[in-house]
Image 1 (cartoon, rainbow over the protein chains, first blue to last red):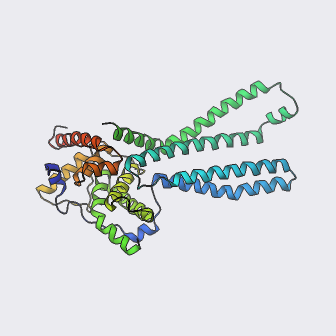
Image 2: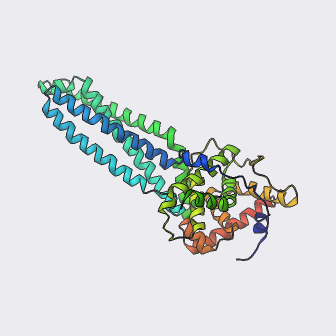
Image 3: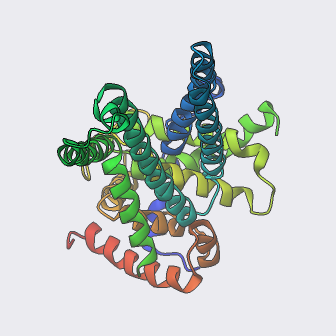
Length: 190
Length: 157
């Protein structure tokens, strides 16, 4: 490759001082990388799953709610498998991938993370709703008089839950997801 | 790779890491964050490095990936990094290099990655391998970005 003006400028001797990275800091440092931060959040949530799910199962069994205990067991196993898969997928995104692959992978991770929170938001909403709403007792007692209104209310609350999750996500990761998408598009286009 | 070997490896590649991080960082704090994160990512992934790529390719990939995806503080567009840790020679060459850095920061972030590798004397094939692009695509882009960079440096951009 021919030498040119730009390379001549770039290769000025001592162009950037040899300020060295303190390696002792590195060995004990926490990553500030986007994917690592997301991975740590998911791992923390998985830790909480291991703690909370058995407590819920045992609590139901203690109060002789065996059917609910079984449901909690099945849902708990499903949740743990879901988290395990998520952690495995996120761990595959390494900074040693080619730049385009890494950016694509990071973008997909953030999108997956957003969907994950959307799912959790909706599940949490239903759990909270079923604990506080009279709709379930109306169902079980065969009282369908107020059902259309209740369903409308649920619909409105689901939309609100989705909007809140998206809003929070946008504040936390909106800029990064936009930058990643832009870099991917720019690299792909000539 | 033991700690001792890794520390030597980082020392050997520190100049490359510093040059690239400087082209992306807007403040001294960002520069430090980036260089530290690069070293950390290299340390975390060094055991998985299989040697199927050159060591330098691995360093460039990790450094660019960190710089392009790092969670940034509020961006101050094109503001030059002025700090005692990053000094250029106090002469005409130093001024020209400082101008080059200012011009680099006016480029799109992805274009910056391509031209930085070109300036580092990487072949089109190596640039393609590091970035995950085709060789022909790299050739077209390098030519366009070089012209854009010269235009900016000579005050026409």
